[in-house]
Image 1 (tube, rainbow, N blue to C red):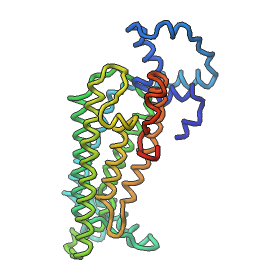
Image 2: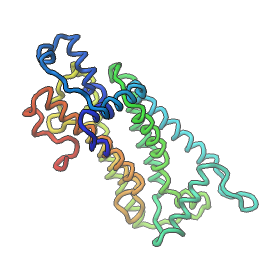
Image 3: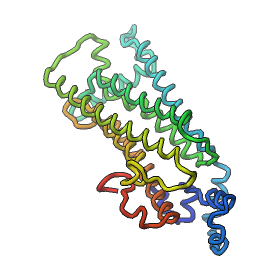
Image 4: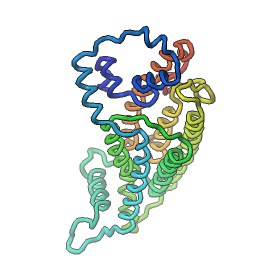
Length: 318
């Protein structure tokens, strides 16, 4: 978000890629003979020292945008790793030693924070919520991997390497976020001291039912958006389905996917899971900036009147 405070000419080097990459778009237009007379008549201003410096640095820190696929592979590997750690974890250690793997140590620390360090001991997700969260997030990641393999067209676009590294950090965090607030339930299950509370069970079932239904609406919606984008002629304006109302409805769906996941994983007595919600705020900040710049790009290329009434990402808000 702080990058938006930089001059517009400098922002484009850090935030724009694909169709919004003005250098690439201009090259493609010239190759196709589009807008050539208009471009020749435009006299670009002399770049500032800051813009030249940023452009030089960024030019050495570019990776193919197609590398996005590695995020989804990475997340699935992380999920498999935590599942294996969970399966092999032994809570009881001889001589009072700490749990025998990283999963166990994280669970133990989270349980201590929930029960001891907090002013008011926090409640835990139910174990079934942990399982459902693992499944839903794995389903989302698997579908994204399928899209990059079978739906999207190969692209020569580049992106900033910093964005690429942030993506890995985000998916590493998400692979923990979907289960860490279930630490008490995980430990309780290993201790075989299960407590049944009819009211809590009903609350858990309601959250899973509502959140899962909401998740699948967004999941299907995002897939349809991606199929539509993949079928468009290069650098044309998407106007079918949710694109009639939003600039970036695939980002809208991403937002609501994580809202749904935070409901599915909400501990007893809470509407949402705060750990998952913090990941949502990260998504909102990153995709919100991209959606805003996409609307500006559409406005410049296709006319402001064609996108003026569309929300960027979140209905009635942004």
